[in-house]
Image 1 (cartoon, rainbow, N blue to C red):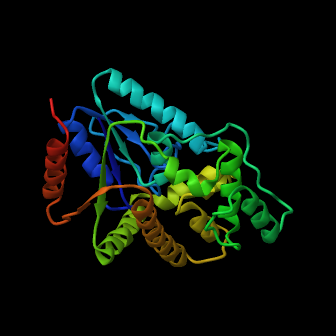
Image 2: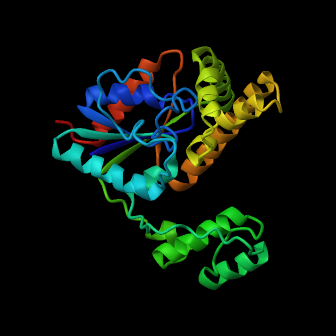
Length: 293
């Protein structure tokens, strides 16, 4: 059995994963696309104390390197196979939905570089997409998704619109989702950002800023590019902090939408007043839905 813990940023996935790893003789596989990188610690919400629980694909990739979902799929599946062979329980935890789906479902990728289609207009790209996927529901002006759909067709030789219909789960999984009232979660996210600054986020980002590294690994996570703007003198520190909070809230909203549309999760509302109740509720659900040793 594989336990999957998903949900929006700041909802409590890390704490739950540590609890379940102890109860289920488990090992944790990171499924956050930003936490795979070294030196990106505070802004990505990386676990501070692993409590002697083995963690995989956490702080393994240098920030100068490009690490794709194809790479993650291969590495995560190797981790899963190894953990299962040793009689342990793999626990995938993170908010990057595509990493989870690419690992657990019959997703096919190629190692070739994706085509960026530079020089093509939106109309031209949309016409190309209609040729290979006449049933697409992607909007004409959504250039990023159109390109993704074209690349998907090139890699898999089937239309993107049929992708969900052909997804096949490769492992025996229990899918857990953590949720909270929107206002409560947003409050938690705002406080979490304040805590990051208290932990030394400014120093962490300044070190990377001074290094001159501007790879995708650095520019993608929320927290770095906003503070780069501050260091460049374009905005105040308070403006950067508020931008980080706003983008984190928006990201959480997008995560909810993605998980609700793409994965069949058993949702649990987090009890922030007594998180042990949430932990025990999830554990009881696992016991009732999977034969425990």
